[in-house]
Image (cartoon, rainbow, N blue to C red; front, side, top):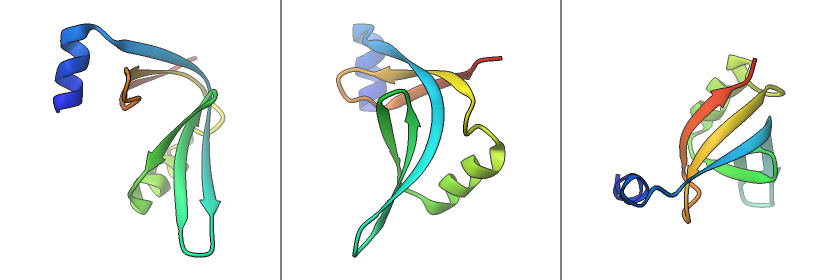
Length: 81
């Protein structure tokens, strides 16, 4: 909430445009899942959240993601038609 408050107060929301990709990076000890748009990757901490996104059909769709600056937290996602 603090990041959102600072972003709104300072007007530092940035749009990121591109195709949505859902990826998993594997290492010897862990798997890390990401919601990607353009060249930006946003970590998904919960496995069930990742599964929900996979099942929603958003992968491959064009989108505009509004992120807080400088933290790059997702504020909003707008799917393009």
